[in-house]
Image (cartoon, rainbow over all chains, first blue to last red; front, side):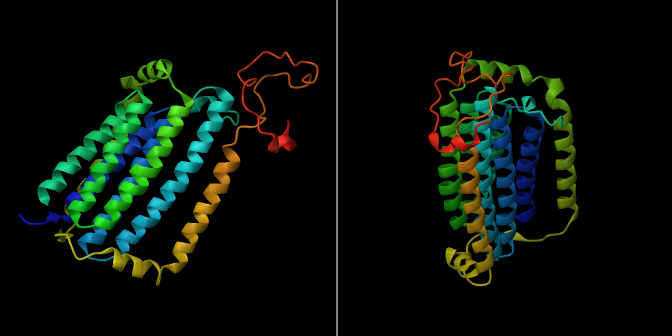
Amino acid sequence: MNGVPMEHGLVLAAVLFALGLGGLMFRRNMIFVLMSLEVMLNAAGLAFIVAGTGWQQPEGQAMFLLVITLAAAEASVGLALLIQLYHRFRTLNLDVASRMRG
Amino acid sequence: MELAFYLSALMAVLATLGVMTNPNPVHAVLYLVVSLLAVALVFFALGAPFAGALEIIVYAGAIMVLFVFVVMMLNLGQATVDQERQWLQPRTWLGPSVLATVLLLTLVSLLWRGDIQAVIEGGGLTARGVGTLLYGPWLLLVELGALLLLAALVTASHVGRIGKVAAPSPAPRDLPTGASTPANGQAHQPSTNGVAGEDV
């Protein structure tokens, strides 16, 4: 056996994405929600890398760079919101921030 | 190379499972660091060393350190762990897990029935190609990324400041007389003075 079939890499990305999606849905603590979002973004970047290396094109890694940029921006804004939530409600439970009855 | 790929893929999945099922935030952050390092190893095994190095430096280095800082700053104690353990009942996670599993099965079956026929043998792609692409035809995207980071910086520094926030206490009217309002945890907060214009 030489070389990894591209399906295996994409299956790994799908498994990581599904794990992150499950965590995003059943967690109520905001730290865990943000971590699940990081896992999902990371899985998307992994899919880009797998496709880029499978077809020997540099676009995959360039898109991974942009995904990392997006993840950094999302993490900084999300953590700022988390600090503000904790400062106002003294908890990280996302259900307490329900003034808009959403 | 194949062995490295499969081993680090297994490690990534197990560490991500640890993130999702751990009630302690600090342990979950450390599991997430392990997961990201395993994904970086996957990149190295697939022959994308530039992406692997970026993953370690930016993800595991910068973003995760931000998470660790925030978790340390909030100083979440045993109460959070107990509450998380109470929330992690099967009737909480069963429905979302079923939905995520259905999504995963759909993706995997689609991948299995397609014919990609590509085998990753590694090598060939260097950082040089990526840089030529980024600073050639994709220059506008790099500029947009820089703009996104600047917007995130401004947003984080605006949202994340801890100033005179509107307290959820019901009586904000008689504040000038009552220096002895019941301390709801904000009396000893360091209040920055630069945001006095937004006193509610």
